[in-house]
Length: 427
Image (cartoon, rainbow, N blue to C red; front, side, top):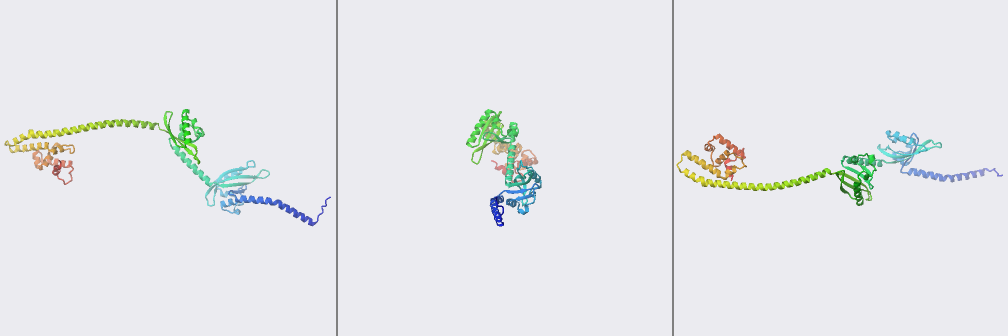
């Protein structure tokens, strides 16, 4: 039978041995706990634990640094202070929905940064339950996703702008993968096929068009993929002439991963081009006819000018040959003073008819009446207003009226230029 009686010293030694053994057993556990605490503190993620009411029970250094507070200022305080009031109920519903059967959830929400700005975070919450399955606490790991959210918003805005631009176009535009499956499109594409977005997304574009046209499109698409270059071509679709542009979309390695297709109805445009070419042909024909007419008219005008010059020369010759000899005889036949005056007028008129000035004044350049031409010739000969009135059997006032009209037609009104001096300069 074992002796259970021990001395005091033996009991002390046995207790010390047990303590040493316990210390040896606790050392690895302490090291594990220390390691876990180091991981917790050094983690770049925000880590915390909190009670169902939101009171914090544990926070790591990253959490403290993010919100600019010490642990003592956070532990025991509610983390809802960092969440905008309008978002708090949504956040609470997320973690209160967790159970032992579904203990985890990931969601995103806004927070209020120390500088007062609104930022975005993503949190993964885990419910911590007791032996009976009742959730007592929550453990959460979070990261700041403000930059990502900002990029997503900018991307969404960019996509919205691009979509708006495409929808504003009356031409069909769509995006397909290399197998022909529809990835995106504009409103004109939907109207072209009379289907909704749900009915078109993911559909193969070759299934939407006639089989004979599909073969052509497939051949052209494969060529675009093979050469990674834009191709434009024309097709007849339902009696319409359509111009299509197929542009390759490349990835970072230069591989064609998608095709952007733009389809434009050019039927009316081509018809207008044909009509324009026909009109140009007719205009050229008419222009040639007009040129020929112009040549003929020029010949006629030249002939008319020649005939007029010949007529003028004939008139002058006839006056000299047929009229002047009899005027000379008449002057020596003993005429009275009045008859001599009439004879002088007759000579003057015949000279006027034969003179170059008379021919110039009768041209369309000056638009003179016969009476104005007669007055102008007498002014050129140095006759006064009174002389002209007597020679033409007119009143002085009438002659002055004609003189004023002549100054107006020769652009001498309100000028100091002399009418006779001007007439003398006319060849």
